Each structure stands twice: as structure tokens, then as C-alpha cells.
Image (tube, rainbow, N blue to C red; front, side, top):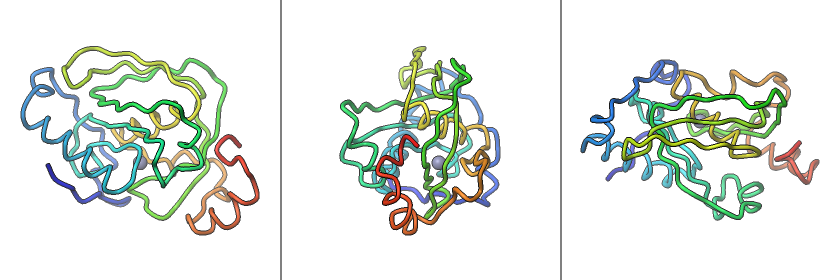
Length: 189
Ligand code: ZN
């Protein structure tokens, strides 16, 4: 459909709790177009996930697609053996462990930065798919983090809110120059 402008940190829509959709709304033409816009915008920006609030639409819709060819996260996605597209409406997260894991995250709404965020290592997400059918996935490792990052957008949160050590926030150029080099496996630090 169309590539939309990604709104950035400071825009109030990113801080709102997005609205849940009814099954009828999920099946509507408006939502179909919204999903296509989100996919087009995510691909254009080279992201691995995007949430509707990031294009200024305060509705509980997120897309996650881990493409092994992705350039922005190549140090991680090259390790993936599978990729799938998730279209997620009205998600509910259940934390399956107290154990935390940390990854360097980035965000299309916070351009140019990477930050190290610790999140629960295993989660279960119940949601409705694009056919308004109930789905449930259990996630660990990087996908658990990606889901939590994207779903945070539906509840007014950004990853920088979850950084506990502000020395672990970096511009991407310096991240590539100093941090990736210092640690050959930054993704699982
Ligand atoms: Zn984000």
C-alpha cells in the first residue's frame, strides 16, 4: 500500500496505550490496509518489527518478521534458521521465567541508537491473528526480546525506559566501532 512516516520519541502517540480491536475491526478493509502499510514501512526502514503507534495509529497491531537477510541486525539474524511473519492484535504477555536476558536493541522511533536491555528470557504471548483467530506462541532467546520490544509499543513504552545501565546506550557508529569489536558475541552478552 504505502510507506508511512515513522514517528519518533517525543511524539505523544508513542506514549499512549493503544486501543484493542474487535474481531470485526480486525477483519475490516481499513485494518488490512493498515497491516500492509506497516509491512511496507518496516521493510523500507529495514526493521524486524513495527507497531501501529510508530506510524501514528494508536491501535494494538504489531508486525514481527525476522528476515535472515536483515542488515540492521545481521549479527543476530544470520544465526536464525527460520523466519516467519507474525501479525499480532490485542496481545497478552505472560512471563514464564524470572531469568533475564540482555540484548542490544534499536528502534525505528529512536533512530541512530542502540541500548542494552534486560528482559525476561521466556514469554508466552496470546493474541489474535489477521483472521481474528486466537493464537499462542512461546518464545525465548532473541525472539522473546523482539516480541517484548514491539508489544511495549502498544502500551506506551520504549526500550530506553528499560535500560538499567545508561552507560550501555550508544550511537550505532560507536556501537559498531567499539562494542561489536570488543565482544564477538554482543547479542548474548
Ligand atoms: Zn521500537
